[in-house]
Structure formats: structure tokens, C-alpha cells
Length: 383
Image (tube, rainbow, N blue to C red):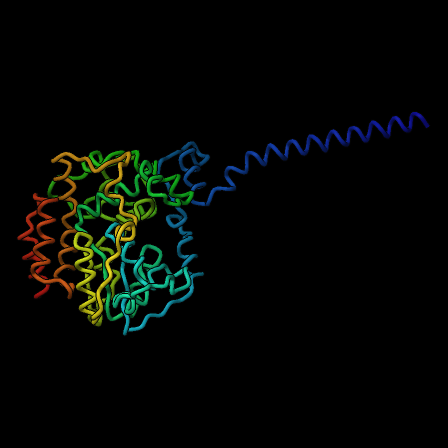
């Protein structure tokens, strides 16, 4: 009996030891597995590309699911509710870094489509707020081509100032000052992208001299959600021309993208511009043009410059040499052409307003032949 009990105890101890060892092994495996499992598919794919593909190859081309044929953005669109628009209303189009956040805060329907509207109660509501049915910014730009508004109100800004603001806004060293909530993808990819151009000067230095300033000259054969930092000059060119959406959202949704391909033109629509440089003048005049007889209320204090960081001391600044400014301006010539084409078309602006825009452009980019550009824009309108 004693021998039998001894054998039973030995067997039990052995079994417990094996169970403990198995649990330890599982725990170790879980620790190894978790860092990969908690990543989104995009980040994990990027890690696999950097580390290698198991066949002795590695690389810095960082692919997102869209680049590999799996599009979480398209999947998100499928879950977003359909949204109709009336031809008797207006859409407010907020192009990034143009003061659009300030205007959206004054609109009853100034919120993205994943929020239930109206998003705010407006006291002393303006004529613009009453007529705007939908707000279009990054999450909803894809809806613009199918929209049916008769009027489109668009926030704009001089292309040089907008580009510099976009560069500083996306920079990982500045992000914490903007109090932005970044996704895991953005936190991972932004430093990898900006290692090519840590300053505005280094970004401009990579751009081509006058003569090769079209997207086709970038030599960047990758999809819009691929960051390839091996060729920094190609990456800079693709960034300034709006060929990359990953990380550089506000560069991607530039004037050529929104004004030339997103806003419907057939049948002809009415377009109004709200210029960041003359924001409250344009706001007041537009409300009066739309029939407002009561005093147009102009916000004061923080509400007058919502998310305006122009006076902040950021780690990465606007500092740039004259040569760097020239290169940046040359690269922005196609953006200036699209910008002035829209300014000339806006129903609420006249020749004096066009001249004001020209003065700002001449101050920022004296190397651009603005007279020739405006003649070309006028000729295009007449043809």
C-alpha cells in the first residue's frame, strides 16, 4: 500500500511539473506574440518589411493595407451611413490649413458625417450657417463628387503659407503641441517619413530646381499609402505634389485634388471663397450677399482663431533660406495655378480681391511669374 501511494504521489508531482512547464511555455509564447498581435495590419506589415521577409531580404518601403489591396478606409466607408444632399443648399469645403476649423465652429452643420447633426446650437445664426447642409473635410472628401449642392463655399489660403503650415502640422516633433490624437499608423510612420527632411529647409533643398515641377517628374512609383524613404528627393517631390496620403494628409488633399477632381462642375455650380488672409471680411460680405440683413457677428478671443498656432514656438519652425524658398515656390507653381483659377471663379470675389491674393503670392514667392500665370488662367476660362 505504501509503495502504491508513493507511486501515485510521484505521478501527481510529475503531472503538476509538466502543467507548470506548459504554462510557462505558453506565457513566453504569448509575450512574443502580443507585440505583433496588437499592431494593426499596416504597422505589422511595415515591421515585417523592415526586418525582412524570411528570404534574406529587407527594406524600408513601408506598406499599408491599401497598398496591399486591403483597404480599411474603404471598409470604413461601407459602414458610414449614406448621405443625400439637396440642390437648394450649400456644402462647406474645408481644405486643410486654411482657417476652415474656425468657420466650421460657426456652422450648425459644421461637423463630419460620423457625428449626428446638427452638431451645435448657434445663437445669432448667420446666413451661411442656415444654408450649409453638409461639411466636407478629410473624412468626407470622398463624398464630394456625388454631392448635389448648388453652392460650394471653400476655405482657401495662399499656397505657400498653406504648404508650410501643412509641413509643420504633420511633423512628429510638433504634433504634441497641436494636441492631436494620432493613430498607431501615424505614430509609427511619421518619424520614418520625416527622417528624410527633419526641417523645412532640408525639405525644400530636396526639391528640384525650376523646370521639373510636375507630379510626373517625381520618380515615385509607389501607391499613395506607401512611404519609401530610401530616395529622399523622390519622397519630397511626391509629398509636395500630393502623391502620398499616408502621413501627409493635407498635402494630399491639395487644391488640384479638391478643386479639380472633387467638387462637381456639371451642371455648373456656384462657388464662394473664404480666404484665410481676409477671413472676417469675406465672412461678413458673403453673409450679406446671401441675404443677411442683421449684423454679422464676428467671434472674438479664442473663437476668432480656432486652432490658430501661428504665434506658437514650435520645435520645427518656418525658417528657410532664400534658395530654399525659391525651390519650394517653384514646386508650388501647379498649386498656385489651381488656386488662382478658383479665385477668379469665386462669385464673391472681384478684381480687387484678386489683386490682394496676387500681392500675398508675390510677397511669398517673388520667383513666380504671376502676371503670365494669371493671363494663362484667364485664357483658360475663355476657351
